[in-house]
Length: 259
Image: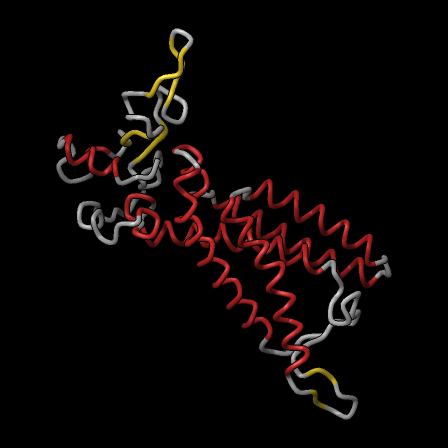
């Protein structure tokens, strides 16, 4: 049973989850390689909508199963399977795992605090904040709510990545990701129509190698075309930027993109 301000509280939680995703992406980005980096930072809109829909379905299903009297252990197993499968399919990153785990632990603990601390109203002492009809194994909530919270990580995180890319023009204009406050901002103008090839990151996977290396004569060597980064400058929007033929400027841009 919830009170009127609970949706606002959930909205604030989603905002915090999103920022935690962005911050942890910047921390762990260097360990994920060029092509993986592009996939992680630029989830498609269908993937974002699928994540939100999947989380909503899991949340709805948990209530349906509980209302129809399915035992707690079975609901916990179903929710855990849905959460694990959803996380692998929708995210699978270190930053996502940490955020989802923090959400799974922090969300229920905040609920315990609210249920315990906030005053009760009415003759029957009804909770002013909210409470679970089934207090579960903990006396406050059933344990199956933990994996439900866990799946809220990818649902909010991928949405935050899309907004972050839209506001920051992707990797090339993302100061938090690059660890450089303003170095690239003046040289990359905002465009009305984003590049369909690189989504305005200015970088695409190198066509000559696999994440910066390739095998030749039985030995794995560093690719000279991308200098081991696995990324090269995007040719589709090459001419839309200032000094497109300035090789040193291009190298400077590529050097600021993490390996």
